[in-house]
Image 1 (cartoon, rainbow, N blue to C red):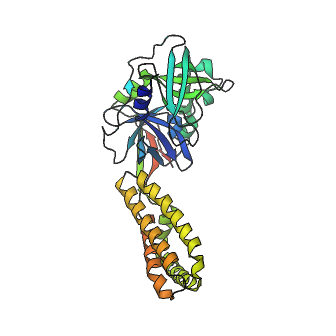
Image 2: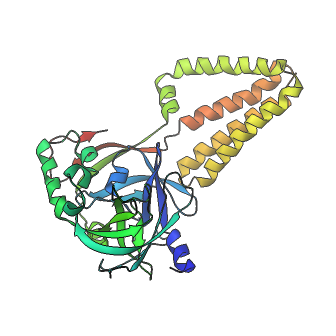
Image 3: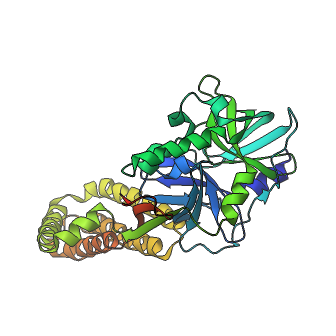
Length: 359
């Protein structure tokens, strides 16, 4: 595969992240900015984020899933459709034996997409590849937890669905990655690998992707809510106590700084600079407005703390009190901004479940 095709494909591939870290791969699949990944990648976490090839990170929500095909369609919050190129979708998954295939994914905690090259082996069915419905349907347990037990039986239908088998050096984190032919057309999506042969990879045919993208009636209803982080939740629930604790902490911090010799300034300045650098990198990758506001307040807090630590050593406590107060207020305000899009519940649209799963 040429370098031009690889570069083009890399602009359309994104990493899927949760509080646990990088959990899989997704790709921009249509003009509306919809992303496709595997259902088992996104069904285990209440909170999802997607980082695109330009380094920008967005909160993401599930729009629909095809549980039998182990596919999910994602939507990014505050994302402008057309700002990132979509992949070229193949019309079918018919391939010749030993035909070259290429995939880009995010194995482990990789910061950039990793290339995986291989070849097509043959077509098959899930029942031929796995020994149990639990292995054949990795999203089943998380998706149907708490629902009507009889519904789990419908996963037996997924055992007969077609899959593609290829030989490729794909690793955990490639789940949801697009697999393209020599012309750059998507022919399948990585969803699993052979437990006994790590280089034998199983793909969902592209026909299933077309079906999910064209389906106007979602199979599930997902309820989301914007939330603050844990610190923000604690502040909201205990405003008086936290305000008193912050005031006392700020005053004691100012007195501590005033008693420290100026020779200690370099240590505190170094710690402050590290925090500033880390928060700057977060701000640089932020795309959604609430993410950017949260990062700006964190940067203001870091800068004020750095000023207090470097300029107020050996001075009167009141000199350090102002920058420390600004640092504390900025940090508290940043925690109070709700920028986490969290899944609250999930329910089948056809009404077959009496009660939604609460997360």
